[in-house]
Length: 305
Image (cartoon, rainbow, N blue to C red; front, side, top):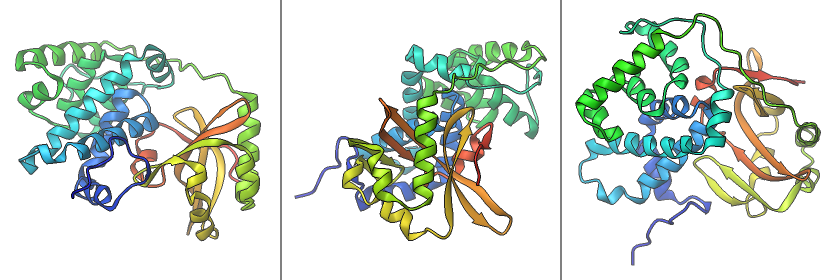
């Protein structure tokens, strides 16, 4: 009897899922860039991509042509991003916390230097125009491919591109004022205590900061109860080569794991902590996502020592 993939990832992911991730490894950085620019956040983009990958894994037997995998991934990611943006509160937060560069683009952007500028600016566009501009001017998809991905015709894609490019060209030269989220003093105290205990390798102290049913998500590896994982054991194994610090990614406060290299300590990946009532109830660890910090607009280490 053949085991069927779980409907949702739970516990330690199986070897077949790990093998699937290997087959799509060459697409993941580009897919993450797309999700990041659609959602307006490097971490939200990663979360959307993780959901996309598992959805495709569940349907992999339906894909007869291996060459169609890229299209399936981008189409699914696009639909997930649209669902994300339909949540008005999440959209407001994403767009308010995403700054843009001080640049005015021509209606027909060209040249390698334009790609990154476009990526920073598309958050100003409605979702369909945002997707069409990204897929054409950054990822170089054909009009036909874009139409298939966003559920439109070639004519509809051309119209969306024209509107989107015109809006980008009309953006003011002044920098956009970014609305910083108000700091949460209680969360700040909790994060400081978490970092202090984590760097002392006081795992009992760290666990005492978490709820009994705290959830853990480790990208590509685990999703489930923190109490059922070997999360802290894995960190203990590499205790000489890392430390934790408070920092920010695209303006959102979170923890950063620093790795020690020849040039000293530098951020390797983020860890997002969520809490309710002064107790940690969710940890998201992005150790397997080296592209994430590269895709972020800003990465700040607030307390590196």
